[in-house]
Length: 139
Image (cartoon, rainbow, N blue to C red; front, side, top):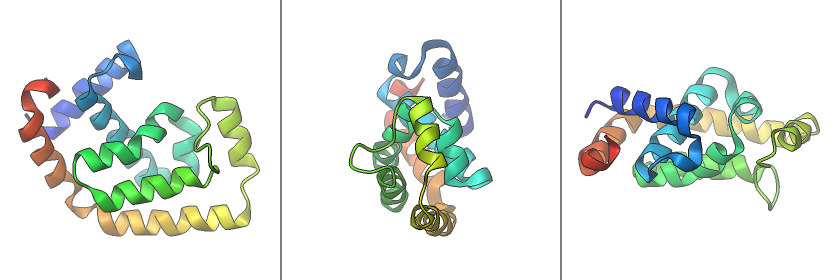
């Protein structure tokens, strides 16, 4: 299955069913798409402002599922900026945490964004291989 088509199907189902209603494969695709599209276009602060906290919490596992270890580490480190509890799932608490980010946390986001851009080159290939292994479940 084409990665773009599989992603679109997962996103359509996410909109209809919510994150909990998705298969593991769909959760993986949706989490990666949200991470990739928001971080690549607007950075981590915008990603955390707009994305459902459940998706941010799932991003490290999603990247590991497609064997994108560097991206998984980056997502994990970005989530850790929020402290031991990770990214707040409540949007208001997440927004409050983002408003009060320290300068050090903002520098961490900047460094992780640069690292992500350098590492994301082979993500499409990894997604294609993931879909080959999970094609029946991702449909």
